[in-house]
Image (cartoon, rainbow, N blue to C red):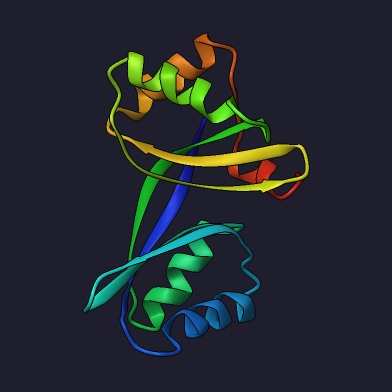
Length: 141
């Protein structure tokens, strides 16, 4: 189960994230998960949104550089050791994780994973009976 993730390149200037949040909000696009990484010159905002195509359209109209990447969303218990178990499975399958970020609410956690071999990652997680969710499911949690 793959999810489309947007990556938006932002200048390291005050208010850039605020502007993106406003653009998406005004277009009726909800952000369900995001992370920002930065260096001295620019940042990369990675996010999962309610309407990928609309988000791409409105951001590109405002001249933002936007790319789309497939990621996996693992839904697991929000308890000690749950992520370690999943990561052991991924690592033992020889899969490299390029990056990941997570968010939790109550008893459940959702982990967005960008592996080097996404098809194999999905296969291995399913074989081990771990729960993967679709983007649409993020809004029902």
